Image: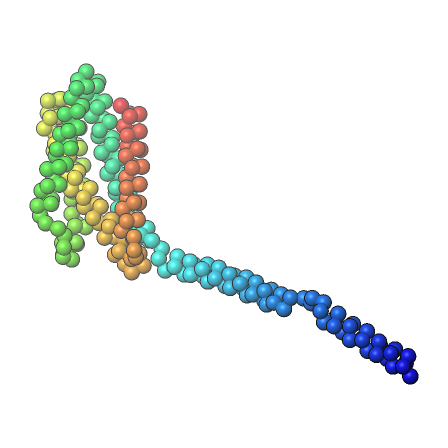
Length: 232
């Protein structure tokens, strides 16, 4: 009986050892599935945020087309381009005229005369006070065509004065008298046109309108100077 009991006891010990060995072996980490689930959730959240951002950007773009949606601003951009083209052409033409008459020294005083007339006109406009009320704002929009017409008449007088050079000293300030008021009125209308309707209103609309106007006027100046230089 002792050998049988010993064998039975040994078998039980081996079985217990096998169970303890299997229990002691390291299994797969318990948090592996949790990490994978977390990664999938982060990816899903990222895709959701990107889709929401694209939808919001499209919605914002449809809601705020920008100041160029204003027909008034587009007309003012064309006006500013032509106005600055005329100014640049006048500067080049005056310089070419005095050089042809061997009096290049007179180019500086003549251009200074145009600038002086522009300053005087701007001071006279400013003395009338700011356009605060709606009635004054409407008057501003009606004033721009009159100022541009007077500026064109001043340039015509400057051209006619070239037939008798001494008259240029008087015609140059008269030519610039309506230049400053025209520019001031133009920029004022461009700023107000950017917020004239609910579609184009928004933060930075006036700044963007001024930026467009400056860019277009610089292009007009370059074109006017090039045409006048080619014709001189």
